[in-house]
Length: 196
Image (cartoon, rainbow, N blue to C red; front, side):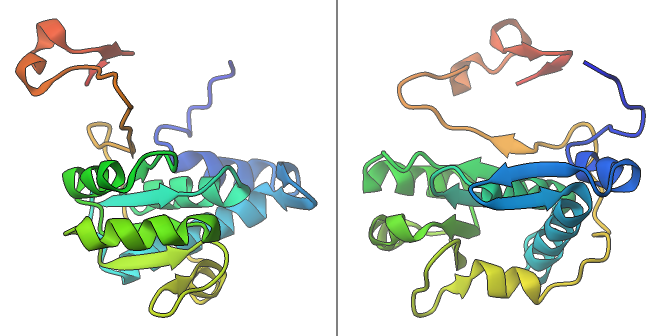
């Protein structure tokens, strides 16, 4: 795997490639092609939009939808805003999803149209979510992803993460890396010199 000195944080990936390979294709999803330059601008808009919504450094932002190119916009946008993305398995039951939202403290939920009904059920059980953004479709009182994103600045987000910051928080079904009783160095998992 090539080493890029300018890529230290997850958020550096689109910025680096937008600078060095702006017109190369970053993603092909269905019939859409996205260049590195466009991807970088989209992720800056997501980052600036999250900041405008009041998302602070290391706040959690949840995502519940099937695979799409928008997932990467949200993940890298969260990284640029120094927020933590929390992926939600849409196959979970409403109480399980509500647990993840409450445990993570997610303030924003991105949700695909196919999961609006599930989202409504979990929002009744969630105590933290302040804003819901529809990835596709629309719902009264919820923001539309494309309209929200396109109304944001594409200037570089001023947030900066450190190597100690978290980028992605994952929940598993039935398998834990460690429990709260095993959070010491002996029982934690080593990921390339960093312990979780």
